[in-house]
Image (cartoon, rainbow, N blue to C red):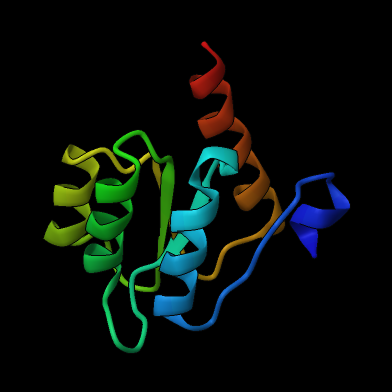
Length: 106
């Protein structure tokens, strides 16, 4: 809701496989992905790699509820565009998205 109110077009998926199928269809129109690190079926690292295989330039902001882990550091080295630690405020969310999209335009 926060993003929609700010004019962003969003898609939400609670099923990882469904989300990946949709990303495969719409990656050319996708500017940014918010990806939770903890999910059923696949973890954030696996989904990140699957998305990178579809679009190596995908902008992914990882969201997690734990301290900055070695896994998150590795994903940063592999091209993650940003990180958010839960709980995330609306201000943090909007600033991070704005920063990542601004870098893309440069």
